[in-house]
Amino acid sequence: MIRSTYVLLLISLVAVSIEDGLAQLKNPRSIPYLWKTDTARKVVPLSEFTVAVPKGAFTVLNTPQFIGAEKGRQVYFRHEPVISLSIDGQARAYPLNVLTVHEIANDTLAGVHILVTYCPLCNASVVYDRRLKYRGKEWLLSFGVSGMLRNSDMVMYDLQTETWWQQLMGDALVGSLAGAELKVIPSLVISVEEFFQRFPSGKILSPQTGLASSYGQNPYVGYDNLKGSPYNDFIDKGKIDKRLPPMERVVDVESKGNRKIYPFSLISKKGVINDTFHDKHIVIFYKSGTVSVLDERDIRKSKNVGTATLFNAMLDGKKLTFQKKGIQFADQETSSTWDITGRSIAGPLKGRQLQIEPHSNHLAFAWLAFYPESEIYNERNKRE
Image (tube, rainbow, N blue to C red):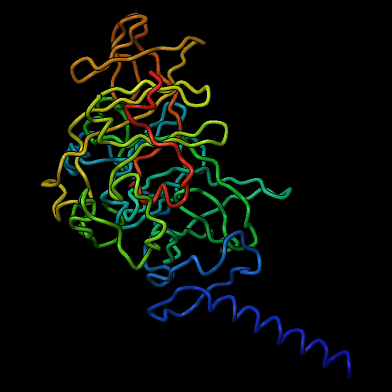
């Protein structure tokens, strides 16, 4: 009898503890809690999460279909941005205007199980490997959109354990896999035109997704106005770093656990940035033409923000230094010509490809909310 009473009391205390923990979630619309997540395992407080929409409100793309260049050019605006990915000679493009609606695509390319993600509130596009080795176990994960945000960035969840993951970082935050980290697969954000110029046989996401949606229409009209700010409901104003305008686009690089960002305002001004960061030699290329998907309602009428891509500047053990050459780029060492995707198209190095360093084009407020210690490139600290 005493033992039974003790067990009942313990169960009651655990239930109260769970309820108290869940009460920390910010849930202004009182959206029903439908999770099986082990919230006792967490690396950040539950109070950092805001429930924005119900679980499953976004229909993710699973094993999506693709079309070729001829049809792709008819369906999509040539200056709209895509996530470009190439593995073992197979290339695919995922338009941001489609991912704005779905935010996640679970796909497989050249035998690699990939997770293609885009959070429009942070303009963060990152590709991950869905395979995970953690605590001696191997997982093949599939992901959904939780409906929650942290620092205004999408919180994903895996269907296998319902662990909550940060989209911008790839870290497992709450659940049985808390503490795990997804591996980034390097990708580029370039235009439809630039993708098919580089990959004539490449494939682009088909708009025939089975979801009746108006792709090409931006639901976040005027969101990335340089003088604007993120939605107040989804981020603590105290976490907005004042070193850059909150809606400034930035490109990031990581080296030896340290991080640095490069503002688009400087990248577009210079055209090329050669830099060394903690012994990592990098180059950033910029080309005008690509539009924003977070400006006008019709993205075809949106402002030109351009394309910025980041590569390792080392090739065959030698450091290359680049300069702008019309709409292309040239290295000073061999005078070879390179395109925005880091491929040499003329000269002694024709056909060679620079290694893509993992990066994306984030909005400054979001990146700095997660990585406030990041160094910010400016004209005074350049290392060219």
